[in-house]
Amino acid sequence: MEQIDNIEEKQQIITEIVNLRSLDIMKILAKKQTSFYPKMFEMNMSNYMNRDFMNRVLSKYGRKFDLEDVQVKKWMMKTACKVGNKKMVQEVLKSRNGYNYLPYLANTDKHIFDIVKTIVADYVPPEIVIELIIQAAKEKDGEERLRILRKTGYSFEEKDAKGRTVVNLMELKAKDRKEKQNQKLYKDALKHLKTVQWTEKRNKLRKLFIVKLTILFISVGMGYSIWSIVHSDKKNGITMSSDSELTSGDLSDTTSDIESEDTVYID
Image (cartoon, rainbow, N blue to C red; front, side, top):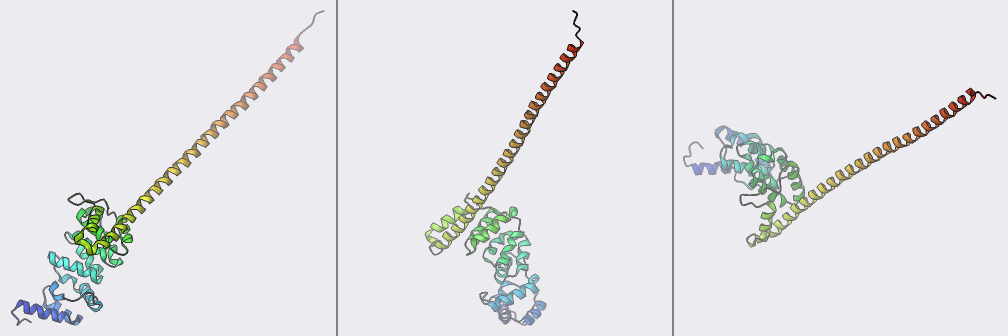
C-alpha cells in the first residue's frame, strides 16, 4: 500500500481489507496506520457479524481513533451504541463536550442506556436534556426509560431557547403534517411522557397524604397524652383535697374531745 499514491484509491483498498473482518489483518493495519478513521469501516451494522467484528475492533483499537475530531467522535458514539461497546461510549462521554452525544443513548440496549445514570444531569445543557427525553420516550419501553431519567435528575420541565418544554415540542411534532409518517410515534411517545408525569404526581400526593396523616396521628396522640396527664392531676387534686378535709375534720374532733375532758364543772 505504501506504493499507492492516490489517497482515495488507498482508502478504498483499506476499506475492502477491513471488510474481510479479520482481526489478524487489523493487527497488521494497526501497526502501519498512525490512526483509524470512520471511512475504513463502511459496513452494514444491521449485520450481526459486522457488529461483532466492529465491537472487537473498538475494544482493542479504540485509542487509534482521534476523539478530538468532532466528526470522528460523532461516528464513534453512533457506532459504539449500535454495537453495544460500553467502554467506548463512556470514553466519548468523558471527552470534551461529550454530553452533546447523550441523545444517542436513548435507543440503545438497556445496559448501554443505563450509562445515563453516571452522568450528572445538572451539567447537561437544556437542549440536550430535551432531545434525550424525546428520543427515550419514542422507544417501546419509553416509560421505563423516562423513569430512569427522572430518578437520575433529568427534568421534564427544561425549556429550550424559545421557552418550549418537552411536552410542547412533542405536541407540535404530533400535529405537524410534515411529520405525518412519525405522528403516531410522537403521539405514543407523548403518552409515555404524560403517564410518567401523572404517576410521579400521584406518588407525590400519596407521600404528602401519608406525611399529613402521620402528623395528625402524632398530634392526636400527643393531645391525648396531655389530656390524660391533666385529667390525672385534677383527679389527684380532688383526692388530696378530700384527704385534707378528712384530716382537718379528725383534728377538729380530737380538739373538741380534749377540750371536753379538760372542762371542770363547779356545782
